[in-house]
Length: 188
Ligand SMILES: CC(C)(COP(=O)(O)OP(=O)(O)OC[C@H]1O[C@@H](n2cnc3c(N)ncnc32)[C@H](O)[C@@H]1OP(=O)(O)O)[C@@H](O)C(=O)NCCC(=O)NCCS
Image (cartoon, rainbow, N blue to C red; front, side):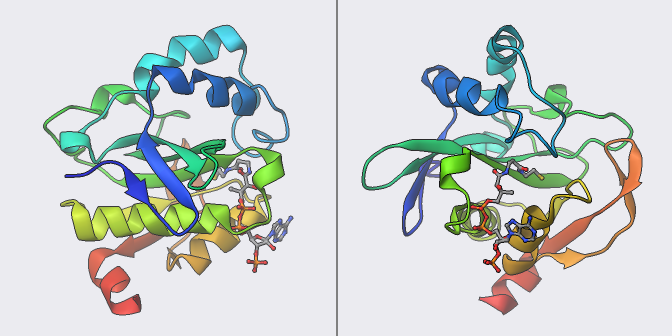
């Protein structure tokens, strides 16, 4: 399975230690985390790097660094990770090398503000769904967002997700979207 993913304008590469730069740039920025948990300290980000570089399910579960295909400029990250149900954060112990998580796998994406409004998040989301359904054994992907994050809702709907809200995730009865492999293949 090739884990380096290309789309029209972007390259997604499995997150590694050298990607701490874009992690610090994005996750210390209040604008980026306005709807996603609030800013982190640089120390906390460095402590999370071993989690963000973990991969499960023979590589198909984890975080990817997103960069522009032409310049290599890093824009942010995209992820396929176990969705927490009662907890408020991802349980990285469920990211196990040779094993898919038992529960839902969610898609996520974070871009630096200068990259917003250009369709990049939709391109990331669609590429991760293509990977999940056409290149990996995953058969269903879910997603959620803060109710105020209307841009994220648009990204999910443009990518083919269906709003099945409400459903418990991140410790609340919240927004919940899903798409199956059959729906993805029918929508292509
Ligand atoms: C949310 C985020 C990923 C969107 O990225 P993006 O590359 O700008 O998204 P896209 O351009 O692919 O699509 C965004 C859509 O939302 C629309 N939009 C943007 N801001 C909006 C707002 N405040 N209200 C309603 N729609 C909005 C855009 O017009 C676009 O729709 P369109 O294609 O119909 O014009 C980006 O803003 C981001 O990284 N935010 C911080 C991290 C975050 O919140 N991640 C999601 C966690 S669930």
